[in-house]
Image 1: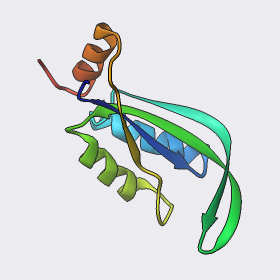
Image 2 (image 1 turned 180 degrees about the vertical axis):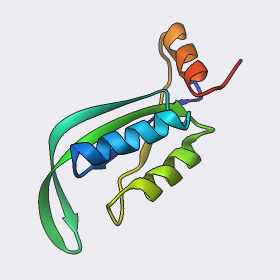
Image 3 (image 1 turned 90 degrees about the horizontal axis):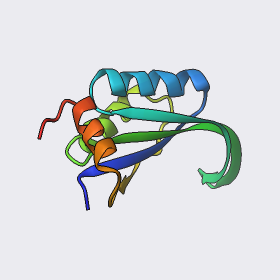
Length: 108
């Protein structure tokens, strides 16, 4: 198990997804954010089934920085309740995991 994490979030527009991604990388809270365009989401909200097109953000960070990532998403997001789910990265290529550390300003 590593201390690296992938955070999943969605945004209602490409512009919002880019704004969140750039802010997280600029603040050294994420090494990389992939934006997956135009996913279709079907979900229950306030008692109704909703459908929308969203942009999925795959945010690479560390366990230590997750609270700051979560707080930044909340502050930057237009949704009342933005998705923010963290998934542990169990293993990966040593070079890539080290690059995440370097990109978020963490030195070994």
